[in-house]
Amino acid sequence: MEPAPRPRPDFQLAGAGGVLFGFTAACIVIGVLIGWALGNAAYGLVFGAMVGIPVGVAATILRYRNI
Image 1 (cartoon, one colour):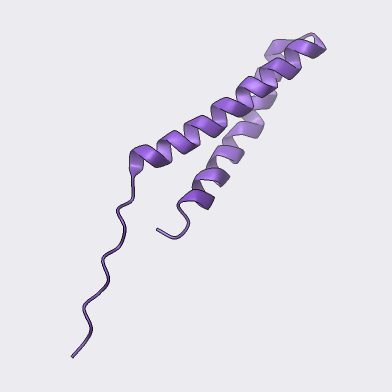
Image 2 (image 1 turned 120 degrees about the horizontal axis):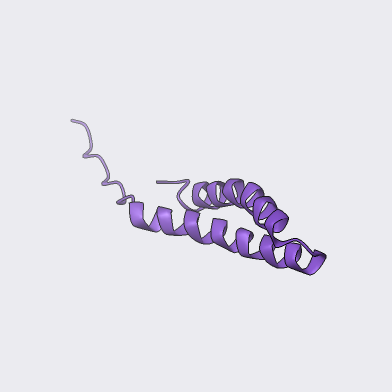
């Protein structure tokens, strides 16, 4: 007789989206602030988004890796 499978924890899609959005937005804000301090906030926005998207994805993977 096989043992009953253990129930898996629920994957919280809203939580994963919040982690992704939060880290991405934080990187964008930091990029805008650095760009503003250096004289061009638009370049900081673009740089923050380019860095923020992979950081947000990585943070989401690290948070929900074992689910």
